[in-house]
Image (cartoon, rainbow, N blue to C red):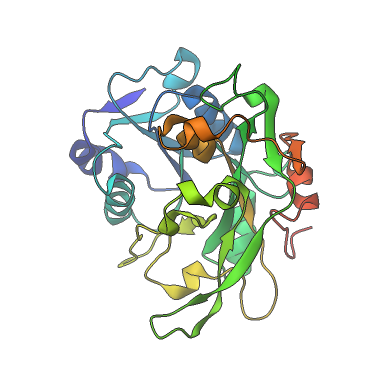
Length: 288
């Protein structure tokens, strides 16, 4: 394992060596599911996996020697956008992906096609960002799993997802941009601040000069925020995430209001891309 004691040392000595992507940036907010998250993304085909975590967080030996570790505190203000923008500024023309612990990337046909193959197809389509939808996962039994995380007994919502046209400051519709909603952030929206209710992210993107990553998971280049190019639908992916469920059970203001996340539209997660495709939670576009 390559270990950097802080973000500045990584930016000086580590990030410039990331000459080829795709690079996965995993931000650990706690230790829950961290090893599983790392293993999943190592298997996905990323060339480098960088884990930002507190020094006291333990990482299993079987994955520790395959990652670049950066000591980093995710509880500081603007921690995510600070780190992502810093990495972007310190690297060159590479593809970057970011997620948190207990989040798992799925793309069409990921069981037999790598992240690199997906990116290669996107480049052929002259697309330099891939829109992802954050699909909330939650444990079926919260009494057995009070932190709402259980990979072997994970559920998701099969319905309840919708999109609204994204507006500019003058209330005009932005071209090929939408705000997407659904999952636990929709069902328990009274516990979710309005700016955090969206489930869309531009999780996978091609770095370029002067590109800026915003706190709301968008970029300063409007084309990066679009769900499709002007002439046809494009591929999208899904980030299957226990993060919202975990936060709702950790938050004293919501935990006692929630005995279970399951409802009549809950189904067990099969950990397979075909299920997400069938539910319309990602699409292959022209990739067959």
